Length: 291
View 1 (cartoon, rainbow, N blue to C red):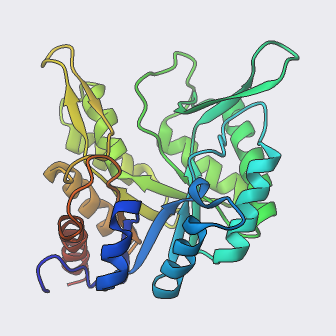
View 2: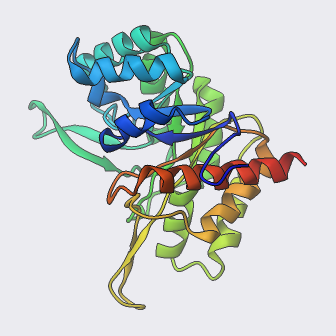
């Protein structure tokens, strides 16, 4: 494998504006590129033209941040219409969003507002019913299964009645969706929870998921803030993937097979070759699994 090149067709990168030119000039042998759906909702313009150009070279995965699938207030019809139109235009290989809420009434009976954030949900039967209903509505509108991503969460809920893996297993079974397994989020949550062995905790989460539900894996970097006793680990997607996160990725690929794997890098973007080097690392892990 040439240094900085991903030759595994199941490995992709998140495509961000500063890397557009490098991608189109070099056309590296990636399996797919992934973009944030909401950045391409307009009916025309330069952004959509770039996405069509990327689609001529690679399969495209659409990864959303705004559906707010766990919102009791329901989905935003305009947002869902825009997503369905983009899916029709691009014909992506996968469509995904997060297991979070963001929409709620500002006051009882008042207008619905959007928090513009990925807010965590409690893993309860009520939250499961809400999310399954919303996921089913999205799938009916876009005409395909949706992948739902596990969240990096910085709070926990006293009324949680099931584990997170059990919640996702039930969601996939009830709605027919799949899961986007973000292994960096698993590590962030394990570290923030003070797990005695964060790597073991992440691998246990992976092992608790049913076979066949994971349709894509994300890896990314995180940062640490504060001191040893009062610090918080942040899922900032702003650095290289940590060795322990690569270990969880390898464990997940060993369990689930050659699942498409994406390297996310959204802040403090590196040189394009650095990003391709991370993709090459993911490809090497996949090759070891298949050997």
